[in-house]
Every structure is written in structure tokens, then in C-alpha cells.
View (cartoon, rainbow, N blue to C red):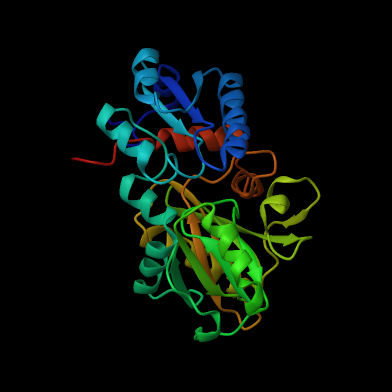
Amino acid sequence: MDTAGIMTREELKSKKIAVLYGGLSAEREVSLKSGAAVHGALVALGYDAVAIDVDRNLAGVLAEKSVDLAFIALHGRYGEDGAVQGLLEVAGIPYTGSGVLASALAMNKVYAKAAFAAAGMLIAPYVVVERGGQFDPQALDFPFPVVVKPSQEGSSVGISIVKDPEDMGAALETAFRYDREVLVEQFINGREIQVGILEDRALGAIEIIPRNQFYDFEAKYTPGMAEHVFPAPLQEGLYRKALATGAAAHHALGCSGYSRVDLLVTASEECYVLEVNTLPGMTALSLFPEIAGGVGIPFGELLERILLASSLKIGV
């Protein structure tokens, strides 16, 4: 049962929609908020939506509930990395967002960077450090400060900015709590610009001005810890460049439907790609719905458009 984005809203109203949220990752609490917002909005619009807090018995719960579609409001591992997408493919349940491969690529920062570089986009110089491996911070080919981050976490979980090589040990220890593979990349001094993608086209770009040193977990999910400016106050040509870069990053990973692309835009008007979020947040402070709202798409309509594009991605 592949909707392939051809349903009408009337047909969508006849479907039982599972909102998958919560989950098993370090971003569980954020996902609970995203899922609650999505479920509440769908119910208010008259849809037959059921919220499912995802655990390892998800396959059984989906069968028990007899759902027709899945709106994935998960973040992090087992939800944003292709795992749930694969389960839904096997179960024959169309779902929102990107497929198995694109989700896995986007979640793994090492492979995502390789794809961005192959597509000719700017990325920060980096090295990969394995847990238990040898690493000499004095031997880096790029200068300090550097950013240390787990390869497969979102919401800035486990990230540190390191200005002195002597502090590298503590930063690596923090990152290794979340992953066996860690990136150490050059710190790029730039403006934090996020591009929203809907129906595989760039919607708009927003600038984030955090109160902290960077847009960390606290700044993302604590009211008042970051200023959001939409549209991003960039010169017209640079704004178009940011949108084009965001769309190119989305397509470079083979993403589907919607995403949010994180960029750093420098004073010399270079657009560095940080990552693609295939399941951007849907909380009250989330950037993707704010971008959509800024171009005249209210939250309910945004959810409908995402659902109308739900599909199975494997097969013909």
C-alpha cells in the first residue's frame, strides 16, 4: 500500500495514522514533545491518529493497531537512522520522510560528509577518532579551536568546542559516551543558518543567534536561549545561495519529502554544510515549523503535506 504522495486530503482522512515518538535514543525527551505536538494537531484536524511510544515491540504494536500510515516523529538512533524505516518497509506501512539509505547516511556524520564533499559542497576539515584508537591532537592538519562530536547523535548531544589541546581528553570522553566513533573537525566561525526543505524544495532559511557559545542542546530546547530570525538577514544573493546549498545537501543524500539542513555561513559568504536532519523537530521551539510558518504554511497544513507524501521507498 504505497501512497506515493497521490492521496487527497479526503483519502487521508480515511487512514489510521500512527504517530511514532519517544523511542530509545538520547533524544527521547525531545521526540516525546515533537510527537505530542504532531498527534495533537492531527486529532484537532479530525484525523484518526494514534500516538505510539516506540520500544522494541514496535512491530507487534503496529500490527495490533492496524495502522495505514506512519508519521515518524522520532529523533536519534533507531528512529532517524533507517532502523524504523526498514521495519516499516518490511511491514508494508507507508511512512513520512526519507528512506532507509538516506536516513542512515544523514545520521552518520562521517558518511554524510563524504557525500557532501563528493557533491562539491564545502565541509569543515575533520578526522575520525575510534574508541580505543590512538589520537594526537598536536598532529592535526588544521588549527584549534575544534569541534568534537559523536558520529551518530543529533540535538548537539555530546558536542564540545575545544580551544586547547589539553582539553581534548575530556571532550573525547564526553563524545564517546554516545558513540564508538567521534569526529574532530575544524571550528568554522560563521552564522548559524538552517534551511527548511519541503516536497524536496527549499522553503526558506532562518538564522539562529544562540546565547551560548554555539547552538547546543540547552539553546535548542530552552525558551529564551536563542534568537530566531526569519527570513535569515542575508544579502539577497547569499540568501539564494544558502537555499541552493540546503537543497543540494538534501539531494546529495537522496533524502525524500522534507528535512532541515544546518549550514554555517562565513563573512566571506561561504556556505559550509554541517548536516541534514531527516526528521527535524516539531516542538514549540523547533525551527522547521517556524520556517514553514514564515512562508505562510501553518502547522496543520505542514503536517498534512508531509503525510500526503508518505510512501514506501523500496521496490517499484
